[in-house]
Image 1: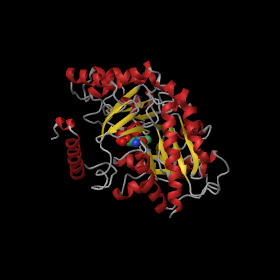
Image 2 (image 1 turned 90 degrees about the vertical axis):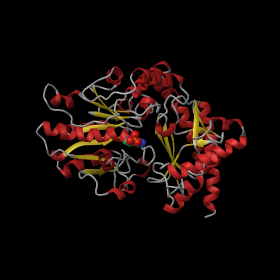
Image 3 (image 1 turned 180 degrees about the vertical axis):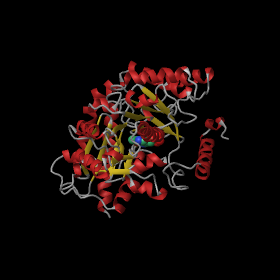
Image 4 (image 1 turned 180 degrees about the horizontal axis):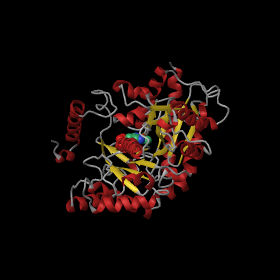
Length: 466
Ligand code: PMP
């Protein structure tokens, strides 16, 4: 146990830090991290305020990724801490299995009022993977009840990330994170993502992306397809935005073939794209929205699957139950935090703030386009990816080893040294991703621009040495 009085002297702090790092190294199994090598030497983040976090050595970082696309309202929000404390005092826990509690009810009604169209049923989970898992299971049970038991398969896109539980992982389109766990759930079909920067040479135009979904449905047999899972803007691969009309066409295709459209908004909901839901920003109506992360700004774990009235119908006034649930889903403390978080969204008009500032954010990233290493800047709202290339003219990308050196060997470390936390990702081509808290503004955009310009400039010199 660390003694808080260690804070009083520098040498004691440094001893405590060494001890903490050693304990982390020995005991904390970091997620998606190399065991024993990743924690030691990595910042141990201790506190946050606004858009900034501090590690336990006192270093300050601008959080360019909002935790993990999560801390929409920023750090140190006393309103959220108070809501959590008050609820813990009143009712620290109760499940929503055959019971309800006031905060879950209030939050469900509030989300239904905010959601597009008739998404009036809210099924809580503890996080994003569980929301995606729940959506696939609901789609399967719904079709069984509707007398279409063959509709079990799902379609999603190459490189997409939808979570880590076996169902969600099967929907995920990243071969590298799936390999160790195969065989996965059968019937998860993949189609191309909307990477317009690297359109395949055979594609005539961007309508190709949506048509590939219909081709996959026809190939598999429409009577076997339950749902299509798509993010409004695809995160993995680096913020692939849809071409104009993409989602409208996908909606049409789904309707033609009786397939459900699931909008996986674990990242894109709750203001990230400048509206409460990403599908609202892009103007389409999903049958299910899966969400998590920003719902509580991360102050407590919570996910929510928002379901259309139509899908709830076969469960109404019968003995049929959706045979699925999680102990901690709809936790009263998490629901209280989510309600307080939505109050902040309203009081500060966070989605409106994103819309008002997104052009300035984009411009501060486009400003880097004079650097030879910057191939493409893409995204919308407060959600951008910068693809780094070896040759700007030919769009030649880096080899696996070069990308590894560029991102892991150099940029990640250098950017954090310069005070910026963001994602350096190589699932697909190498990209740097930015998704700051929604309270960020021009001052933070300037910091991001300055750090990236310096780090990218140094990275070009570093890569020239290879
Ligand atoms: N879907 C999407 C689109 C995501 O980005 C994520 C997480 N980044 C998930 C699902 C899984 O969410 P969680 O990590 O909360 O399980």
